[in-house]
Amino acid sequence: MRKSIWMAVMAVALSAGVMAGDGIPMGNAVFYPSVEFVYTHTDNLFLQDGSMPYGNESDTFWAIRPRLGFEFPFKESYMRLDLGYQYKDYNDYTLTSHDTWLADFTSNFKFSNNAVLKVDARYFRGVQEVLEFDPGYERYFSNDPFDRWEFRVGVDFNLNKNNTLGFYGLYNQVHFRHDNENQPWYNYDELGGGVTWKYHFRPESALILNSEYVTSDPDFYDYDYNQYYYDPVRNTWYNARGREYDYWTIVTGWEGDLGRVMNGYAKAGYGDMNFTQSNPFSDFSGLIFDAGLGFRASETVKLDLTLNRRPYQSEYNVNNFYTATAGQFQVQQQVSRYLFWSAGYRYQENAYPNAVKPLYDWYWGVPIYEYWATQGQTRRDKIGRAYGEVGVHLTKQISLRANYQYEKRDSNIHWWDYTGDVRPYSYTENRFSFQAQLGW
Image 1 (cartoon, helix red, strand yellow):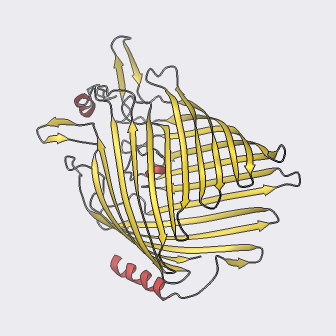
Image 2: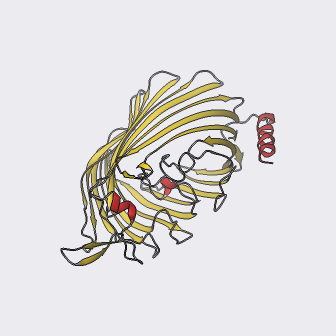
Image 3: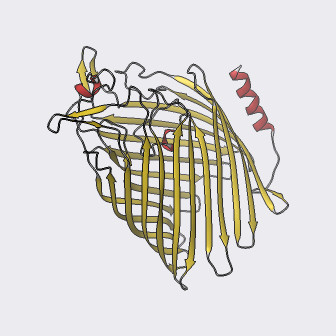
């Protein structure tokens, strides 16, 4: 049945030969419909080492992703709304939900006094998209539905010909739909804001100074994963998950175009993440940076480089946070009107400040075996990902792609038992995908 459905949608995509521009005009609006069909095989569904119970299990899934975009330009302002849906099904594995939803609204309103109001909102409901609730990639597998809401409202003022000053507010919420011991992360609400000054030394480039403040309020579930740590010196039990924090940053840098060859952004500064006073474990204080540079090597070849470092809230043992430092390089080429390819590599290291402590089950009061066996180890995860893609544009609206990804996570956390060397946070994965896309 699944094979028949896949062959049918492929036939529809390949038989459609309608030519059009970058969108479909609809009065004062522009309409962008598209649909994507994906077929993927993985040799490690749960991203687990072979020493673990579900390690190196293969499976295949297919997905269909329709998307509708609406753009409303007027004078020097615009609004854009994108609505997306995904239905996903595995050959063997059973998902708690097959549905993923996305609604993305962006807007830019320019007034007669040259002030600019920007209102952005996003809703995402997913299951396996772990980067939505843990963008630093501590967790890497999920089968629990969650909702994410994001809002950003800001206004920019022109102080003079070269200087602008902006203020903005932020809200971000992640809530899981099932509060149980299998929940991969905790619920949290984030609220914050910032101020940005820009000096435009050329029309498309600016020097930036930004300061931002965010407060986060985690909400924990009271099941088996609610673990506690006993401090025999203070004769006190600490909730190892009481991780409300305030995060303040100040960064400076550049963004925009530098001629026809290079564009992007490069920002660096200082971050300070402080947790509640009742939490005795480490706070973050130190260097943060974020850079993304694009180089046009020729008319058909483009190179992209990204570098970033920042702390993320953690769910692991007594660690309040982990620091993710990453770099990625990608090259892409449009070989001809029809043929294109891209390849890249990403490396990331997640570093934790505190050594593992032997936590106890909150109900029975006995040590949790993993933490007892790894106590004293300070976690470091090294993540490497290589990927490549080859595609063809059959028409302006129809493209086919084949891609491959190899990922390896090497974590130093391990222990020895009667089965051998157990590595709960290490794995390798080979993933092959085929995609057909029809759209504007």
